[in-house]
Each structure stands twice: as structure tokens, then as C-alpha cells.
Length: 160
Image (cartoon, rainbow, N blue to C red; front, side, top):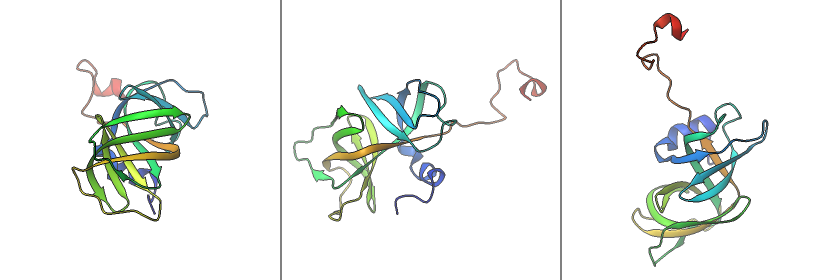
């Protein structure tokens, strides 16, 4: 099992969310489009329409499923998007936990889930490449809300 719930997945992997630019989307569409590392990615929104409402800078956990993570001995990092949900990446392994690995693809972190039977033990610091199985999942990290964060001129009554 990869996740218990979207909320549990976000809680576990939020430290590895990518800073992306979300684009406006059609009401009711499960498709998120974002700019990450100079590439436009299409993601299946796993968090629902209200968490990701509105365009702008957001933190999103980019979660491709792959058959395998292959060693990449040339140490190259980057992304290649060739179509809707079609993504190939290469980069440095930041951490591993079971079938999950965080791979830094040229400054864009991906939380990669290996679903193939030949999942191997990886070590942090090594370089790998992968080809995502469409769709690539996206988990928008909810913005922190705090009663302590108010505009300087806003009273407690105005905030309600």
C-alpha cells in the first residue's frame, strides 16, 4: 500500500513538496497544471478541488508511479515531458523508504513510488532515472492557517 489516505500521504511527505506555479483550471476538473523546474506538468489532483483552488505559487507533492528506478551513472538531473501525464526524470536520490524514494530532478523533488516487482534497495546520494506511468499524482499541501497570522491593522473582530 502506498498511502492510507491523501491526508496521511501529505503529512508524511510534505517536507519533500516542490515549489510550483499552479495555473488556473476548469471547475470540476481533476487535472492540475503547474510549472516546475522549467517544465509544464499535468497532474491528477489527489487533494480535491478546494485545496488547490486558485492559481499561484504553491507547494505540491509530485508523485509519479514507476515500474523501476534505474541507475543513472552519468549523474545528470532533469525532466522531460512528452505529453499529457508523460514524464521522464533523472536525478539524485535524497532518501528511500520501502518502495518510496525522493528523487531531486534538477532542483525539483519527486516522491517516486515503485510499483514494479523488481524494486531494489537504493542508497541516498546515488543517481537514478525513471519513466512515470500516467497519470502523475499531485498532492497540494494545504497552506498553514493560524489565528496568529493577521494583517497588522486587523482586529480579532475583523478576522471573524
